[in-house]
Image (tube, rainbow, N blue to C red):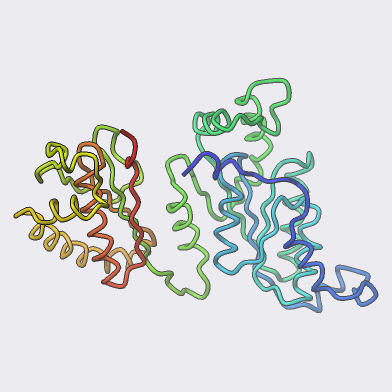
Length: 327
């Protein structure tokens, strides 16, 4: 998961979604004066509170829930959680999610009280706690040149330690813990989809076919790795060396090798065997990595062909080339 995506915790200002939600309540004169009375007149709402350590991916988790059909408000102060749920319930919101952080010094007590009140009102609150290892969080902040919200005049690690202490109470009550230390965006999305997909519907499997160069290292997010170095290397042909596996002359050379088609056919059969099993086990994202020496010729051509074949099988597939142009 990219550092920028995981550390984009946003601002405390209300989003356009908040304004839209407020608009559903109608004229101010029509709003009941007491929230307690309103809560008895409204149907229950499924509520997810996304909280956890700053930089661990709370806002990314919120975007996943929004894609799943939840109404999401970013950086909501804990004291406003109950009023916002009640306001949404009087409209047409039945699945409400709030991303909440520790900018409020009364964070823990306010949030725990809000969750208690919502449960007593008949709503269904759940807490997702997103966290990561200290060294991972420090690296994310350093790569983005950002200060931790609780850092003050100290170090980033001081802010992380202080935040962990503040979150102890709510962390112990969380319904779902998600450690993003070793997750990419796709894996975080798959984790939350498995937990919160609407009415048990199974989201479709999406495949990424990723070409890469072994000399630059293995992709850490690969589910399957294919080695295309058994094929002759176009690099040693002067007329092909400047081109890439996306060019017709290189593609035809690579795919025209005697072993290329049998290899593609047999590995396609392996994928046909694996994909139904992945779906049964709730896997939503498949990354097939195809490597050659430099990630320019053979791996690119083979990856493009695998992507074409997977698309023909009805899989939503995209081909990406990690190291193309790196030379």
